[in-house]
Image (cartoon, rainbow, N blue to C red; front, side, top):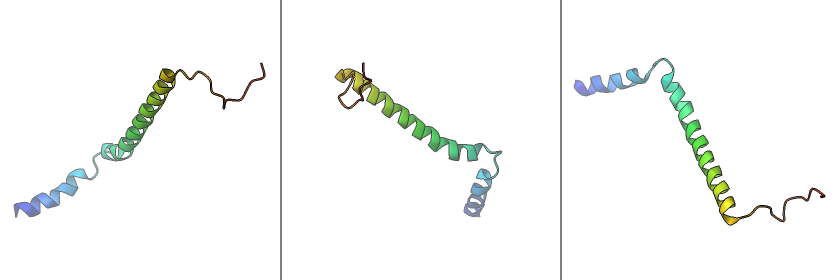
Length: 64
C-alpha cells in the first residue's frame, strides 16, 4: 500500500508549483549553454593573447 501511495504522490508534487519548475526546465539549459559559450570565448581570447597574434594576414587592409 505504501508503494502505491508514494508512486501516486510523486507526479502530484511536481505539478503546478507556481511556475518555478517550468522556469527551471527552460532557464536551466539556457543558462548552461550561455555559461559554456562564455567559457569558450574566454578561452579563445586568452589563447589569442598568449600567442601574440595582434593582426593576421587574413584581415582586410583598411588602406592606410
